[in-house]
Length: 159
View 1 (cartoon, rainbow, N blue to C red):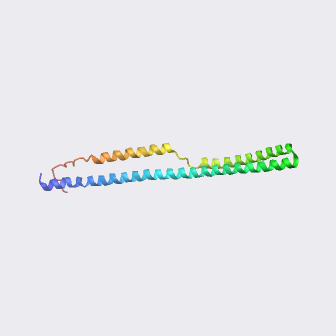
View 2 (cartoon, rainbow, N blue to C red; view 1 turned 90 degrees about the horizontal axis):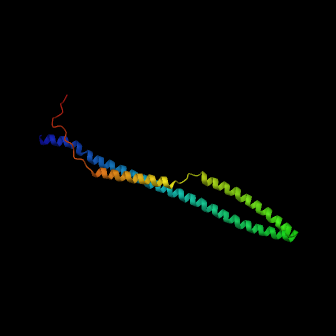
């Protein structure tokens, strides 16, 4: 086979290897960016849920302190005005009222928290592991560069 025919037959295949490498690099970059985006979204979801839980805890603490002060004040006032029986009845009414309000508010905010998109860390971890395996497979396949195949030495007939 002449040098001209040999160059002509392998020249087309030599251009495929760099194209495949660029494609593999592009796919691996895309997967890496996908992994980073998934991590970022998970962190943002966790931050938002943590913030809401902290606000709920602060509300519960403030409600508890307010409940104690109001209960103490009402009991002392009722005891001063009507005696110990009135103080006991006042304490019971105030306790039931505050517990009812706390239950309604707690249910409302816990329902809002449950209604949000749940962060499924197990699924996220599985997805990241699959992406890592896929990247390793792509890297292993791109390192295996097949030798250019010889085309038939016969020139193609022209029409």
